[in-house]
Image (cartoon, rainbow, N blue to C red):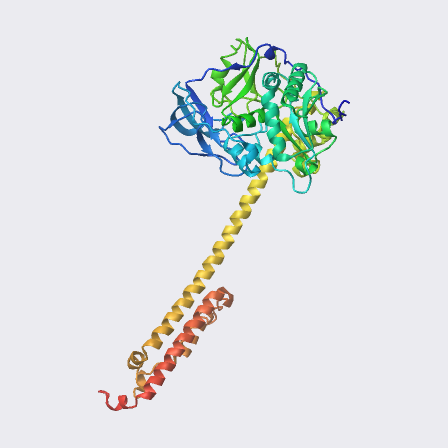
Length: 568
């Protein structure tokens, strides 16, 4: 009985351009002399370097440790010497540098001691930690740490585990070739995920334009004795998106405010499953991946390459044609132009496309929006891109958020069908960036205000505490030595030398600032003195009054002092 399929809203059917790169089997790229390994290659935390300049490292050795639970370790792709730990050109549209470990290969390709594990005898949490330490992330492009997705919801039982082999973007064929040649590894890796999540069904979804991959995966499932279902889904971009594939296979729509596990389903890419199998069965961390080299090259093909190989070294394997003018990473729908050829291949690198003016003609000039609604019909998330466009262009970001701007996955379907050739995704990215920037500025301003208020409160508190300490010290000194205080004080027999009572003096001093210094001059505002200053003066006055009382008591207890005084 065939599996019932569902539909998702929208989508488009661009030219696939996949046949050229699947004619040859997966090749193994030669090891370059120099590897640039960025430490941050995943969504989440930034791994910290754990090697030093000049260290010799082995293939598979950890060079960057995961710093958070949502993070993944980074490893040396070959043996060699660490020549630099410094910012290098990032494989990112911005081209900004990112902290990287530069390794000079020694040509020996010497492995660390690999330790396979029997994951079935281990606690699930220990297996997740092993996958984190092996650097496993989603290899479909999202690079989310895989171990963090291997915990089922405590409220919703796991119904389906989806293994994503749709690969809907044009030009990209790395998953197609992986399923054709290494189906057993994918099935074994899916079995690991099945044992950790315990779903009722395992569904392997593959677009129906990949008949060889579908046949190979069904054969691998039968050979492994598993009950997994290999299902051909209609070819329609973006069917390879996790939410779209889940919708097609299960009929479940995952809201933007929830995770798929809240709906009882989880999704992993086929390459991620294969890497999990190799990490646990052979003790091999994620140090390489299959990358498609396609477009304007003489030999389009899929290659297994070490992570950290530069784009310059990689494209040489395909011999770019003379009219190549730029390079894209990813597909033409969601990919981006590389900032330079010295950028390295990373865990998110699934395809490098050599572009030319003939293959990718310059876009026509942008024209005004005619509100035809084509973009809304093509949007797989049922948004209103033309409204988002108007609000983004007018910098009305509040309204853009009301129209669910952040539900946009930037798939490019809207721009693909726009008759006015408006680069809609670019406007949406601009609006998202502005909103994120304003949120950062708002948080920074709130933090600065909180620090300012705290500093003022601290200063006032320290002034009051200092005044209290001084008053206590004066009182303690007078109490400890009453005889010296009485001796130093003038006697009652010398009325001319008797000072005014201390309390009166203190009171006069306290009141002095409020009395005008010149007749007719306006008195100073009494509110100018702070509460802490008045409290300090009151404490000093009290301490002086106590000292005076103690001196009088001491003088009354010794009447003979007056008779024997030299002044008599």
